[in-house]
Structure formats: structure tokens, C-alpha cells
Length: 116
Length: 111
Image 1 (cartoon, helix red, strand yellow):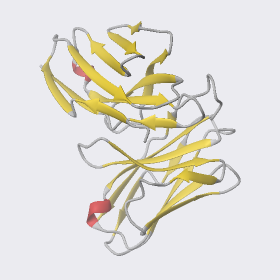
Image 2 (image 1 turned 30 degrees about the vertical axis):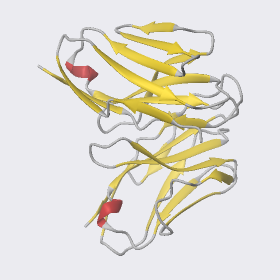
Image 3 (image 1 turned 90 degrees about the vertical axis):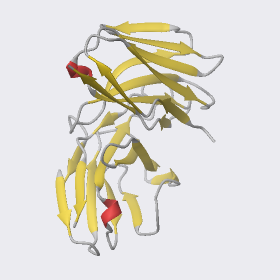
């Protein structure tokens, strides 16, 4: 696609429910990142994909969080049994993953998750 | 562990004043460093890229510097405007194909 697309743009869910956030990266981009931003806070790394594998998932805050990527393209971030502290904007970024010259990250608009 | 640290975490300045944001990194091998600007409610957008051999680069009122020896970069904003209010994020390329992101500095410009 023309840019990184995230859906939904906004999600309000009840505490304890599961949610799925979707990221559609730029076509051909092999690297994909998930971050989150709590209100007024900086970026918090969650997970990094290279192709379908996740060489770095050290930022996932608990086992309620999981992510997968299929076909080297779309990624979904799943949060189980949501808690109020999960409320944040979840940002996805992709880059071409080329060693030189292809290292600009392109961000989606984010999914604003509110757990009530 | 490869890390990118930004300071300050947040900053408030008066319109028309200058400010400097800092980025220190331990990423190795180093390929390049980018500064991104994130307006409220939007995704970050690249402002400038610094490669190993570049010491300074300007983009309008924004000037980025890089000291590859000390592994430090700064983003200097001259004559700030209200529209400069945003989060500024430093991102370092690991030289392979992984990017390491700083947490960002939240800048607020007041009139």
C-alpha cells in the first residue's frame, strides 16, 4: 500500500476482553515494529519482526500480549484480558530492512486503545 | 544491549526561543541516525538523516549534529514556533536492518 495502515483507529473495550490490533505495512517492507505510547509518555518498544519471525520481542509487557506476522506482511497484536493500564496508542512502523539506504521507518497513524 | 537514550523527557519553552534535544546511543555497528517529529495524534515523520561521515545537517529551523566518536546527536530548533510542539524521536540504524528507537522528547512551545 501507499503507507502503513493500522486498524482500528480507535478501540474502546471493557476490562477483561481480548483485542486484536492490525498493522498493514508498506508493501515489500520486511521489518515491522510495534510500539505503544501512553498518554504524555514516550515510545515504548514492544516487538520487532524481520519477515515472519520476531528476533526481538523483549518489550512485550506480559504474557497477555502476543503478536504474529504472516506472509511477511500483515501483523496483528493481540492483548488478552485487557487491563486499564493497557490503554495507550499502539503504533506500528515498517522499514524496507535493506542494510544501507533503506532504513527510514514509516509509521502508521496508530490505534488508540481505551480500556474501561 | 543496543540502546538510544533521549533527553530531556519533556521540555517547555517560550515561542521564539531556541532549544536543543539530545540523543545518546550505544548502537553498534552504526549505520545512520534519524530524527522524527510526531505531531499530536499522528505518526512520526522523518525530519533528517545523519550518516557516519556527517557532522551537521540543517532542515529549515532544525539543525541536527552527530558526533560518531562520542555517539551523541542533538537536534537544535531555532526561533521556535507553536507548530514545533510535538514529540521528537531519535532512531538509530544498527547497520544491519534493525532500527533502535529512543523514547522521544515531548516539546511544548508556549506563546
